Amino acid sequence: MNIIQRQIAWGAGMSLLILAVLTASFFTMFPIPGWQDLWETEILDIPFILFVPSVTLAIGLIFGVLSGIYWRRQLFAVDTMLRQVEEGRQLDVPETGKELQSIAVRAEKIQKNMAEQAKISQKLANEKAEDIESRMQEIVSQERNRLARELHDSVSQQLFAASMMMSAITETQQDPEDRQTKQLKMVEEMIHQSQLEMRALLLHLRPAALKGKSLQEGIEELLVELLQKVSMEIEWKVETFPLDKGVEDHLFRILQEAVSNTLRHSKSQNLEVLLIQRDDYAILRVADDGVGFDVEETKAGSYGLQNMYERAAEVGGSMKIISVKNKGTRLEVKVPIM
Image (tube, rainbow, N blue to C red; front, top):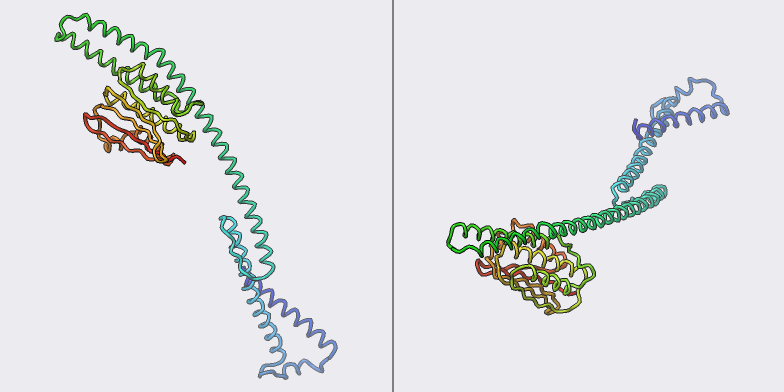
């Protein structure tokens, strides 16, 4: 039974009850000679004894219908407000009486409390996620350092020793056109390439953070160390100017990636690094005279290049690469100085 049916039944029952009470009171105070008079007395051609109950019942039914419709609207409005609270939407309160306004005020308070609880929960979740991410980054950094040390102390040293031995062996060969001599030369070149791959890998494993150094100090330290380990001419020009820590870290990581790619793929003899400030922009440029590559084709499938583009974009900058086959590659990153 819905609310309208309940209100109709309630209105009809109350009307009949009131009719019975009033009729009993009237007949008690004003007794009638006989019940036949009530049947013979007519109103609108309807006996009095039928007319009065019928009119009273009709009034009760109409009151019940109107009352049911009114309360159904009120309950529907309350249900709508509760749904808005549940979905977190702004309350749309119809002006239908003080009772509903009071409910709306309480619903708004509940909604505000829920929003505050949601903010607190999100804040706690973010803090927890940031803490976990920070600890994970620290663990990853420590593990990268450990692997770099172990590779440098074991594999890198063994490759260096093998390279020296192969150089000594090839120097003792009398005939440079001999088949065995050529094979030894090929092995020596393979060891040399493996050394370059190892140095590039060590660059990848080194942490991206500068650890208290400025970007300029980090670049010079990296290139001086690299100059001592590879047979490549390295030149650099580094200007001193202030940058935000986040920008410095991203530019240093881009430089590491670019130098690593040069060691592994370019087969170049010269490397130039430039860090300057021009027109409120920090410009990092890395150029080599290697074999070059197809920028568009490599960009689509290279995680390293994609990572560099993303790092440049994260600090509000841009990166472009120009590469010509057998002429070399030039990478340039421009970041606005805020």
